[in-house]
Image 1 (cartoon, one colour):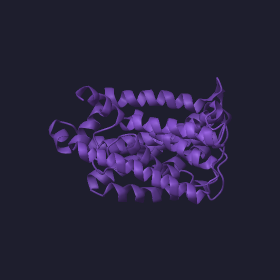
Image 2 (image 1 turned 120 degrees about the vertical axis):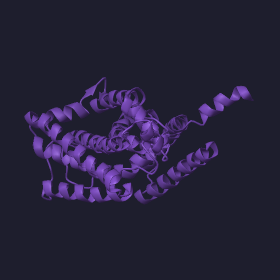
Image 3 (image 1 turned 90 degrees about the vertical axis):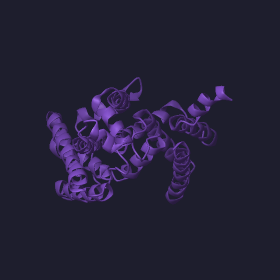
Length: 321
């Protein structure tokens, strides 16, 4: 029995569970709708999942840093990143670099305000980030003036949707991004500090970490990564006509983080699991779509399934504690 213990621990790993469910969805989906698991379809699903993967990376950093710390403004940041990028580039390749820099600076700055509100002023994270989301949505509305933003440039579209070996560029970007995120979390002082903060805020402070600065910066990174996802999303869509297009990423990013094994109490988890969680969510959504289930039915099934997964992980966590 002792020899089986390491195996059981591995099998109970959330990343392993999410991977198993994702593969099961492919098998069942192919059986129910032939062609669901073919290469081109999998690539399409991974393409869509990549945008959530970038958003969830920032959410992952925030959740990892402490108990009850969360960012519910990321969906609005995705929209702002797409709209600002499109408005500044205005369809011309010569404006891409400037557009990218403005998106990164603006979204990072907004995230810093989130962090200041939470840490220095003491506003609860839920209230602070939800309120900032409203402000950001107003900014997006002001920039667009209620009109579509037709700003994706040829080079942006090529980078995101251009194919090499029949795989879109955004998937290559996500692969590189994933490697860098894993390295950042596990091999840099900043990344390791987030684990220390998440495990015990006060102990981290007594050990010499500037917890306030770290948390403020983490919120900045979360918003900036959401803005980056929005910038790439513009290259995928070609134009932006809906200021609520990023809203779907808010809850999805939180769910992907938890399904991927990041503890909502902080200090535990990693981005590899989060990336697998993003893939699982997209596979599930696509599976429900090909079953010709109406939108309301998909939402119910998706909600129940996710509730079961989250409940299972929460129970396992209580048992460990």
